[in-house]
Length: 169
Figure 1 (cartoon, one colour):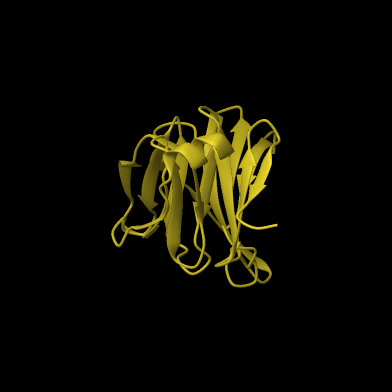
Figure 2 (tube, rainbow, N blue to C red):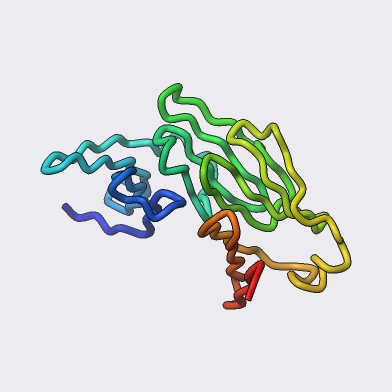
């Protein structure tokens, strides 16, 4: 009632019909809280999930096909949140400059100038770019990037200063 939505997050892929979930960060008289919302036709199911976020995330994503597994990015680290098991794996990945998701995979850009892809459990890693000199030239020594994987062939890197990089023209 007397609440204000501070931010919202949706599935990594733009498949809202496949994954009708939202995560809202809300400020009310009781303080800030996070709510996991499922839109089921005319019904709305709301679950308060504040305890799953030990620190305020800059970004939260989940795969459209995995509704109970969320990834939150804060202060250079990635947490893995399993809503069904009510578990949080803090420090799932550390020393990151950005992350993104696509097709049941997590994409990370780490502070060692490597760009990698891995499965949702953090295994089956594949290095997509390891040329430190090239990566440092492209991304600079500092800064955080939102990684948006639009297809297996098109990846966008959105810099916090408004820069935009893509893996192709």
